[in-house]
Amino acid sequence: AQKITQTQPGMFVQEKEAVTLDCTYDTSDPSYGLFWYKQPSSGEMIFLIYQGSYDQQNATEGRYSLNFQKARKSANLVISASQLGDSAMYFCAMREGLVDTGNQFYFGTGTSLTVIP
Amino acid sequence: NAGVTQTPKFQVLKTGQSMTLQCAQDMNHNSMYWYRQDPGMGLRLIYYSASEGTTDKGEVPNGYNVSRLNKREFSLRLESAAPSQTSVYFCASTVFTDTQYFGPGTRLTVL
Image (cartoon, rainbow over all chains, first blue to last red; front, side, top):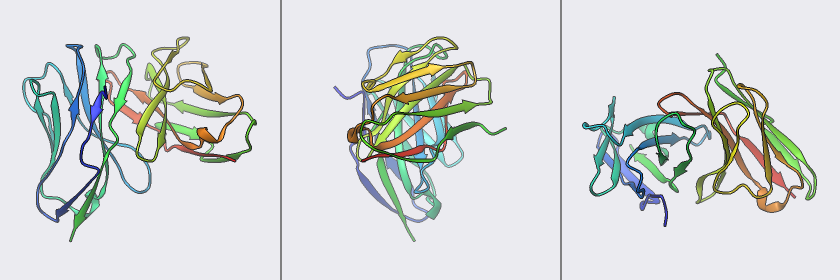
């Protein structure tokens, strides 16, 4: 079974609108971390947001928020007030196990977001 | 602070040739990782190192070897390159929250 599933290969959003990128994960470990990364066409990987499995509140970083629904094993990224510079590939990722113990990371296949002016 | 650096940025090999991809970080991170990225496949973990002197296999280790030379450096070696190893290779290191910081990538083509 896939550890990380991103079911939206491509998404379009109007500038200034909000968009939700879906991510579901699969683990039986009670300790894990969930991440979102952005990869623009230039190719670098940019960290956006992190959610720990024991965090009670949804993570937020500026215009990014992570909608964490533990029972459903979903970790959707919400981008508010989309900008043209948000056009990129977005990857959801998971670390299994306790933090800073050298664990495997798993990435989804990504969602390509295009912001329309 | 250079962050995570990788050399080379681009490389073309012939089938059967060997090469080493170099990675270094100056952030005093314990854990380091090597990934490959193929179209439609996301990033797949090749090897990782939780600390100096330790290495572990990831999802796709076949055809690769690694060396954690010291805390700063983590190299990836292809002993006998194959066309299936044509990919973009990323090195990453992690801070205590396990947020991964990535290098700029190496684009490798094996003919």
